[in-house]
Amino acid sequence: MSRFTATTFARYKDQGKRIVMCTAYDVAQARIAQAAGIDAILVGDSLGNTILGYDTTLPVTMDDMVRATAAVVKGAPDTFIVGDLPFMSYQASFTDGMYNAGRLMKEGGAAAVKLEGASPLALDLVEGLTEAGVPVIGHLGLTPQSVNALGGFKTQGKDALAAANLMIDAEALAAVGAMAIVLECIPAELARAVTERVDCATISIGAGPDCDGEIQVFHDLCGLGGDFTPRHAHHFAEGGEALTAGLSDYATAVRDRAFPGEDQTTHVDPQVISEAITQVEALLDGRVSPDLFEDPDKSRPEAS
Image 1 (spheres, rainbow, N blue to C red):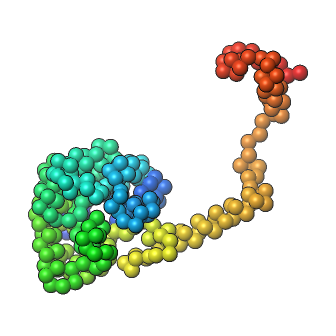
Image 2: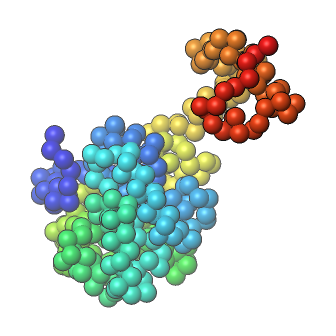
Image 3: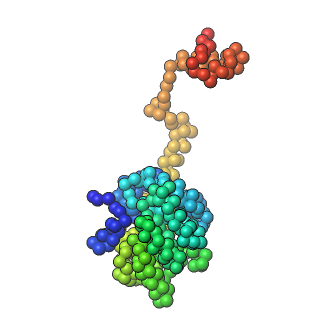
């Protein structure tokens, strides 16, 4: 199977092949995603919710994203990795956006970046990054970085004017070079219309089955999201239950002195410990200098 790259998004769209994406935020999650055959991984600023415990993605910093992206790249070196540009890493200026996208690629090792919205500045940035050789994924609909302006986490594009604006934004992103567009929490009919109108791939999260691909949050897929699961998500594994049961078994085994056992234990000749005790006692009694314990070439007191 050929390696998934930025050009694969358009090829899959043309061929009618579905693109499979999920998020990941650390080495272990990335290894699991790669082993499962996921096409592309997004290191999302949703790590603010899933990893850092924030109510929104707004507090996530560039340093957070660079570190997480680098970890995911290490865990999934053969998978296409997309790094998310967090809140206010590009909204203030074109220069900020270019610089911070460069950080995700140079320091984090990402193969592409994602940004939200289709404001004039965002469109300029997508075009500038594309011209600089940086593949870009856009993001429309429910854009979590704009949660305060949107009035909360709710479905977007439900009336004709809002739907028309979203279609215009999608076409604008495609025109300036976006290789794909994430469509989040919009009606399936609108997502289908956008998918048919734009040349680049569309990736659904809560946008129905008719986009060119799907992306979901790792924790939602694996049952690690706690008591709340978004309507658009599904637990394909009950990881939380399995991990809780495993840790509970571990705690019981430790308390019952059943773990660790011989398979997890290393031994040494008891004479070694006897000699070590003699040396420690000699040090505490002042019979030897502490310097002897800092220089392995100096003689140690013999065990009596």
